[in-house]
Amino acid sequence: MVFKCQENSFLKQFESKVLRCEETKEPIVEYGKVSPFEGFQVVLEDTILFPAGGGQPHDTGYLNDEPVLQVLRKGSEALHFVKEPLEVGSMVSQRINWERRFDHMQQHSGQHLLSAILENEYNLPTTSWWLGADESFVELDSVKVADDVVQRVEDRCNDLIRQALPVTVKFCKADDPDLNEAHTRGLPKDCTEILRVINIKGVDENMCCGTHVSNLSQLQVIKLLGAEPGKKGKTNLRFLIGNRVTKTLQTMLEREKALTGLLKNEPSKHEDLVQKLQKNLKLTNKNLQNTLNELAQYEIEKIKNMAEKPKYVFMFKKEATPDFNRAICKGLDGEGIFLFLASEEPDKPKEGQIMIQGPEAHCNALGSQITEVLKGKGAFKNGKFQGKAGDLSGINKCKKLIEDYFNNLQ
Ligand SMILES: [Zn+2]
Image (cartoon, rainbow, N blue to C red; front, side, top):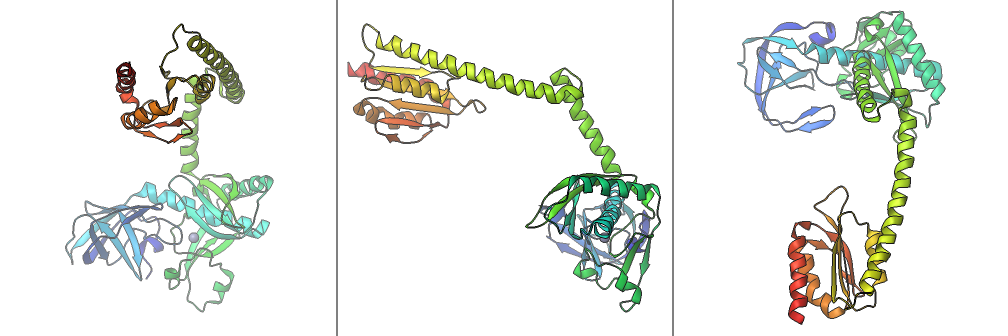
């Protein structure tokens, strides 16, 4: 069946009769994202709401005031997904979410133009395509596409858009000899009964069930975003058409403005400034590392030189690095002192690193209690424990535990 939306892709309102209305739990699929749904599937005599097919996502809109969340093609019927039931036999008024539909028309007709230029002029046939929520891509049967080819294809497509070439739809019978000349690129199996050919004057003829613009000027502009490796032996060429170009440019401008605020300098300086910041950070980290090493040596000497050697050391330094803690452990190894060292994870302050070391009897007595309080993960190996603390909120309880244990020993 040929739907009204395929006869005239610019109809925004239409009246039609409800033929069937059945309960459904089939999920909603939106640009590849699946969401559960419970409601009704409505079949109408005819529809201006495009059911997903040929790579083009479904339309959304209204039946009277009832929002249509999805339209799917099943055989020769279009199923409209609504939350509330509609009366069979009644007339409903259909309205389309035109902004969404026109965006799909721009991306879809743009894909036909792009694929035609790639195949006819660069011998790069399209094997499939994807229309996403933000950007789209054509999958090309080639391992690589050179940057200069991408640039030339973009220029060529924009040139044809400026020429405002007409885009027309014709309906053919299966035995029409004209059909041999038309491609069947991207044609889904359930569309084969609809022999519908989209023609871009002098550029391309393609069998397709989708909705299209009526001339190329309606695409406004095409921007290719780059070629990337796709599935084995294929390349994905990402693109934006029409409104998506200005929308994306706006997002980029806002991001750039935010960066200008953060870096306190104009966009042309951003790259240099970030490089400088990265270099400084590296140097600062190196200095911090050296300072922490010196501090570790100082702590070790201080403990070793105490008039009375301590039985235990409890050290919780939030900003300590694993290297700092390891240096302390190494420096006091064999001194017969029980060591407990802890530090915070830089990006997750509730979690941290812990190290325990010392005489076996103390480790056996305290180890499991400490790991329980701090939700520690790890194991004792050769009298040493190095692991993660899942919850540092018990650190004071842990300190008390160690203090009490050694006070009771005396
Ligand atoms: Zn198509």
